[in-house]
Every structure is written in structure tokens, then in C-alpha cells.
Image 1 (cartoon, rainbow, N blue to C red):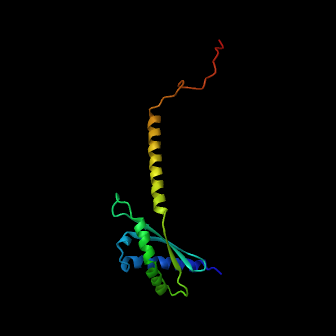
Image 2 (cartoon, helix red, strand yellow; image 1 turned 180 degrees about the vertical axis):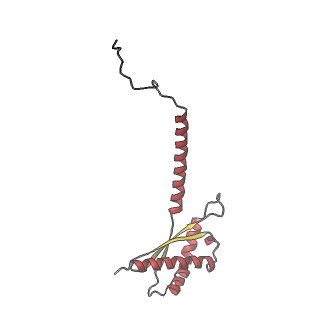
Image 3 (cartoon, rainbow, N blue to C red; image 1 turned 120 degrees about the vertical axis):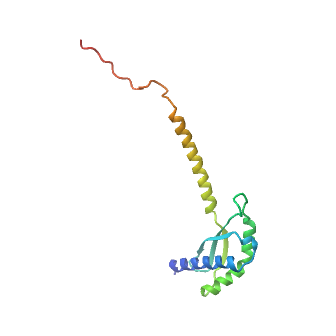
Length: 148
């Protein structure tokens, strides 16, 4: 029987343990800019997927995602043993690390929204100086006949 609440609690605890271990115990320089964003645990608590992001040292610098993935893969045994020691579950879940696509998707959405805003401003600027294509009053008024 699957206990979703227990799986969520374990996932949150695994996120905390892995983040602490990356910050204080694992001394790989490729992991200096890695942030743990989320963890998902299967219903049987046997497998955990840890999502992470890699930030660049500066805005112009592209983050080393391949190096971070290799470093996480090589440190997965140490991280799994740390998770097993600190969670106290009967079977320590295996850890799989997946690069989180949410920051890239959010950045792409921000770029699209900025382009849309610029396009809307251009349309508003053109509409402010535009004049009607036809007569000022495009609707013809009925002729008034003099009753005189």
C-alpha cells in the first residue's frame, strides 16, 4: 500500500540531506554552484529522483551542467549512504539526479513575455498616431428631407 504522505516527507528529508552534504561534505569544485530544487520518491520508497539546477558564476558565464552531472554521478554513493544514515528507513532509496528544466523554461517564458510587451507597445504607438482609412464617420446617416 502506497503512503503518499510518507513518500513526500521522505522526499523532503532527502532534499535536505543531499543539499547539506553537497554544501559541507562533498568537496568537488564542480558542485559549488549546484542547488537541489526538488526530490520525488516512488510509492514503494525504493527510488528517489533528485532535481537540481546549476548556476553560472556570473550572468555571462554558461553553467557547467555536464561537469555537475558527472560530479553528482560520482558522489551518488556517498550521498546515498548519507541518506541511509540520516533517514533510518529499512531500504535506502537509490538516487537518480536529473537536471531541472524549470529555470530554463521560466527564462524562456520571460523572454517571450518581454517580446510580447514590446510588440504591444509598438502597436499602441502606431495606433495613437493612426487615422481612419475612410471617412471620419464610416456610417452613413440617412438623408434628411425637408418637410417644407
